[in-house]
Length: 532
Image (cartoon, rainbow, N blue to C red; front, side):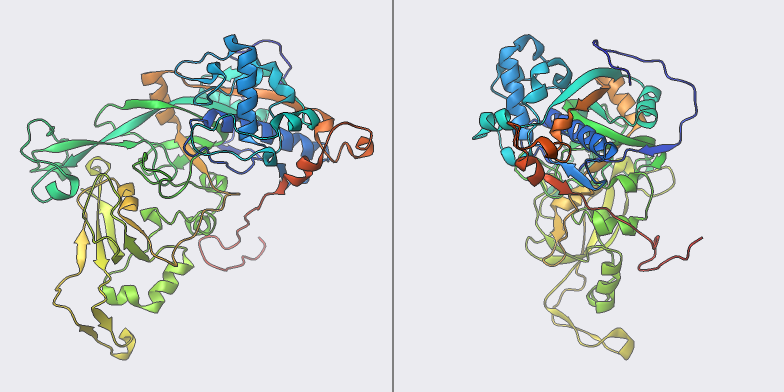
């Protein structure tokens, strides 16, 4: 990419054939924004860390597995200070950084427009920790002393902004450039069937003229006269963005991420083919606070590049709160069989679940604190072409402590029932699949975190992003030509360290090793393939 002193809003791409997928090397681990509207800071951090890493590896100053972790808290304060000095460059619609006090909303383009950031904003992570709650935007004791002694110095030589797919793919493939993406987000509306059987669980009135809406003309809704509108965020626990054409999208806000790859042939659960692999800044699992209604999940880059199997993926990104990661069994005796637990463990799935009853969409489906097993889950209206508006029904087996199994099945054992319960199975009303994560949770001993070095990536289908752009506007992706001074690398500065005013100790302390995952067995456990 040529250096430039002005914003380039478009470039002419060649007609050369691009490969069907591409993933960037040197992408650093995901960091979490949590309860603050600082996604733009984390997109900026991703670009700075990636450029620092790739330049350091190319120059022989960093190992391929090493990376420098930067401080998002220090970056945010540096931006606020720069905005106080140059407020005209900090006015973005609905954002607050122009005040110099709040990092709630901003744009990663400040890396290009605020030249003061080049020697103040990039500081090692240990300079000050990120404060995940609002109201602590300028909290960083010792920041200005650290700025004065920091050798980190970068220069943004130019920026290209793209609005269409081919230009973005060429940036990734031809120039190995990470792209920062600014995009609108929307809520997806689902239509839940409201009947006498479901009214208690989903808190609806099938005779209400106010809340009842016409149901979709699909076989799954046959005989249902009342449907209620229920909104969800437009991402699944499989780390995929989606929308449903049943009802129009409602804009929820905006989000900034980085694009680190693409795969033209990946097919999502919602049936979208092809999309961008994005590095996100969202947590995995249950919500960290009461303001969120849904659980989340993510994957590794390699998964969306289709480089390994689902079972291999679950060994690094198990997503234990996602119903996709729950092992199903037919009856209580089978569920309790030690062999079933072994099967579940082999494929890295959760077997035993506990009812947490935290869903805002369906209440009282199970007994809070009781234990269950997944029996089955299936799309509601699972005939070909009839997906019931993205809903599923699921059944669970109650792990009744009053029911005991005396012997293993193969030795002629019997099940002795000490309870009058004829059937310990419960079934949910039709719900989006991910709603189950707020109803059931892995029991003690079943928990396993996603690997923070490898997970945290999402798939944004091309058509979903195109739809957001057409309906709401505001989508653009930028590549920044970031160049780091040699003094920014402890390894490059060793000879003159004693004669310099800079302090490289924090850089050495925050230069970390990133884990890598290698798989040899394909979909089969512990199999070593011969060399082909």
